[in-house]
Amino acid sequence: MAKIALITGANKGIGFETARQLGLKGYTVLIGARDQKRGQEAVDILVSEKINAQLIELDPTNPDSIQKAVTAVESQFGVLDVLINNAGKMSDADHAAPASVPLSAFRETYELNVFALHEVTRAFWDLLNKSKAARLVNVSSALGSLTLHSNGGMGDFKVIAYDSSKAAVNMMTTHYAYQWKGTAHKANTIHPGSVKTDLNPNGELTVEEGAKTSVELATVADDGPNGKFFHLGNELPW
Ligand SMILES: NC(=O)c1ccc[n+]([C@@H]2O[C@H](COP(=O)([O-])OP(=O)(O)OC[C@H]3O[C@@H](n4cnc5c(N)ncnc54)[C@H](OP(=O)(O)O)[C@@H]3O)[C@@H](O)[C@H]2O)c1
Image (tube, rainbow, N blue to C red; front, side):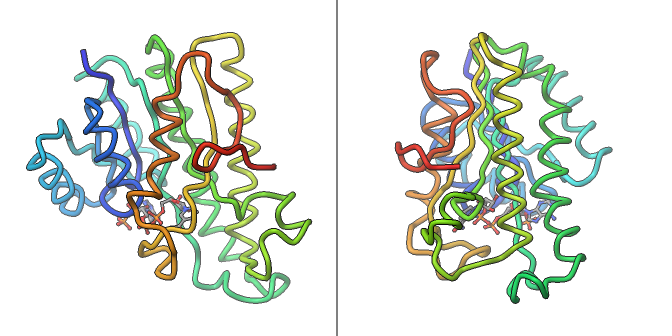
């Protein structure tokens, strides 16, 4: 049976392209989308490319929506092989000097990037553990690297709520990975690159390039890494 992969925020951007690339590898891809119409449009494109894609209505910030999604996956497949926590956002109010960024920007950003990521992971944990070799991929950012900010590697670009939310994602990933220590399952965190999407209109990479790292870690071998941070095959510093 084909492996089952759920990607959150898969109706567009890096998530959509990740679904396409996994679909082309033979995975059944579940397109997590908070908006039914946008999600179905994405599914229709993938299906027209002969990819086995299905819509899963999933707003990661809404516990009822998460529960419905778990029930749908459980009743149809009974297992989840890959979960890619891809949905993420950057608040407009984050584009200010760090000490001036309002708390509302933190709340808005953490709600999706941090709290929802944990809630989705927690909700799908039992189904992931039913896989022979589950893969959890958390879409973080090099902007979440404490090392790169402290050594100047990130230059002058500072968005404090977003950056700290991704640092939290990195830490959380080490903990999910710890829980899977000694098992066949793997949890890793990734930086897609600076990718041209609605979130980052000035990005330099295409979505095709931007999806590669998620796909690499979603399909990583059983002797592959667990609890690490990657970009295009290279390990990144925390
Ligand atoms: N692009 C980059 O350069 C870059 C760099 C590093 C990391 N990343 C990370 O890559 C991931 C994908 O980003 P992207 O560039 O592909 O962005 P994108 O094109 O803006 O797509 C974001 C996805 O997340 C969903 N989403 C946004 N806000 C949401 C909310 N409040 N609740 C539920 N879903 C929400 C969107 O759904 P709707 O269409 O319904 O809004 C969409 O499916 C994010 O985690 C981002 O932080 C991106």
